[in-house]
Length: 169
Image (tube, rainbow, N blue to C red; front, top):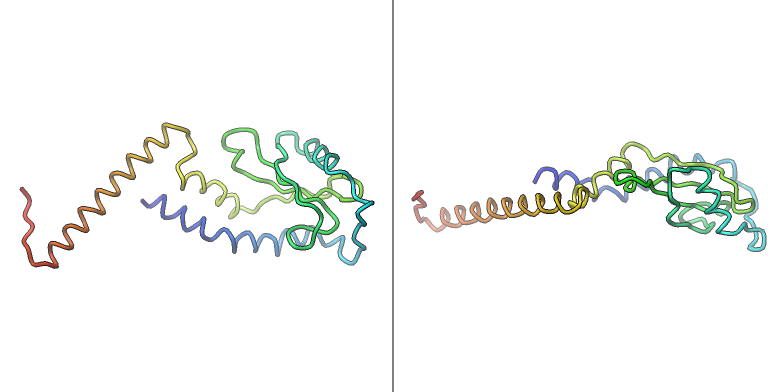
């Protein structure tokens, strides 16, 4: 119950933590492009070139998604490409990369701070999908025990409120 509760709290804090990362680390990485003209549509490198550049820059990572140049999420000067690892553990750890929108060259790899890494690792632990079927079975058994403890506590509380004496058999 403590693990699920603690990881649930971490999951709930994901939005403000990610906003903190965007307002500090990401903005610092984008500083060199402040005040520059945004590239026109015909000046943009191909998305395929951006993906290939990302795959070459971090060989142990797999590019999984791309965000086109914009002001809302990334930068109007770069493609934002999210990558993940290849192993069971690193597949949960995402790393964003900035690829120059004009040239398709890597401009920055944004290392996630410790608090976002902890969040990324807590999500599968919260939902019980880390270790495949064995962990799901253990998680299911722990769920049944938790439900039994809650149900018996609720029964004892209701019995005490009604004035009945509850004695063990």
